[in-house]
Image (cartoon, rainbow, N blue to C red; front, side, top):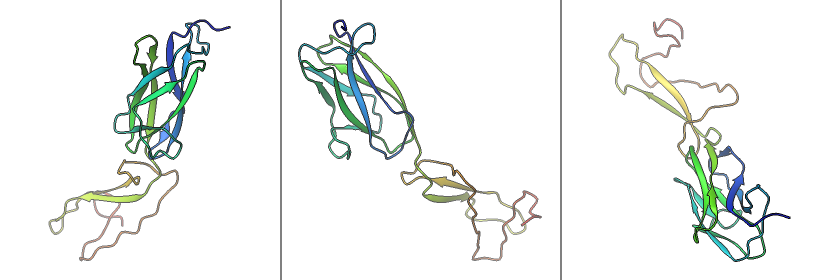
Length: 171
């Protein structure tokens, strides 16, 4: 049998994709890491969300800042979603300060590519090559990468040309 609960541990998937709603369990555990039922209701403050948020259901529509493990139980589930690519340390801190909060390292990765970006000077001097960069963003504005080659057709409304080298000799 487990000993008396001494800590609250939050756990789930990491990394996750930006914009995805993911479940996380909050478990009361004894000093040896065994799940241990609480003898009174435990209300925990949910922290570490950064720009993301905790939710009460799997559709991630109703935010919550606390979670409860009911007396006689040892676990509850919350949901987390963030649209920003970031690193977090999620935690569930016992409001009564009886159980120690054990943080969970979570990485939110960018979602799949959604749009191309083109950056460089808006004006160019005649006869001088100007560098431009093409990038990818996910639907939330995070810089992302593609799993496969993406072919981009470059066109111009002026008389300029696009080149693949800095000497402007290979188009």
